[in-house]
Length: 369
Ligand SMILES: O=C(O)CCC(=O)C1=CC=C[C@@H](O)[C@@H]1C(=O)O
Ligand SMILES: [Mg+2]
Image (cartoon, rainbow, N blue to C red):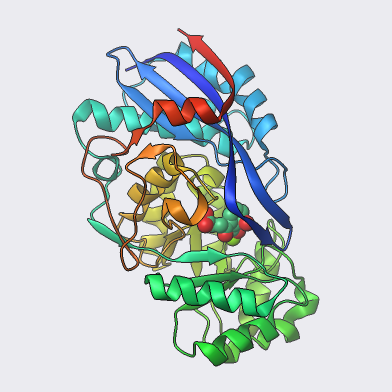
């Protein structure tokens, strides 16, 4: 198998609403879409899940464009491969840049599945035909506004509600949500906004029966997370801390958390995701698939990922309409009562709308073998 041609599209889309976390607010999203063709004319798609600024992670859209343009795409075009796992090995000498590596891996897996006439879910070993979906809500200035959004999402049937927290917008916010919704599956995500000095504060979340607290401390800090977990009843879920199989292995060994939020981009692709999945399954660490405010292309990959057996908790893969006035795939991703059907068509199982992709593309470059 080989890539015959790879086109990089820099796509720029505006979300319906701004999304605020402890590290900032985002509404306009630019990201790189990879369109790869094999020697038989099959097309594989991937979405590089960067943001415009390196706030969640060190990678950012223009940086990843350069990484792809100068290193990863030319290298991928030089090689032949039997299985997409080989791309992770090919890219391994380059340090980090996982989001950029993962987008080529994503397109390779899509092609690999299409060549066999099977869905991406089946190709990566997924077994579920439908998946449960949760929704992630940003920080709001106004509590009433947050409660209104929660009501809307609960009424739509989403299977869990995640709210972002930061210092000053934490215990009181959770308390008020619980006053209105004592029983909904609820979790919080701090995006690294706290330190071990906040143990007493974070302990105040324990009475509220949260499913988990996501990434309370700094990304690299597995040791401090392990210390914090000893003091908390609420399970810690790791997001920004997990960039590799070894990170997951060490986190499990140290007891840095009890749950892992898998973002395929963050770990460098589906091949590495699968290894971490199997490790977590063996260690009885439940997982769920995190979102990166993706367009439908990245969302389609996340749906396939969530179909793996150890993704036992609802993920962030909400409907296209939660983010976009119009998505770039057809059909868009629909969620009914918090449930999403895993597509059975070959590859990612959604069509990329050429017309819409062109409309949102601001830069484009094609490489041939
Ligand atoms: O709905 C989604 O796609 C998930 C949104 C979300 O929570 C996140 C998106 C991007 C970066 C982070 O803020 C983040 C997260 O930490 O999980
Ligand atoms: Mg997170």
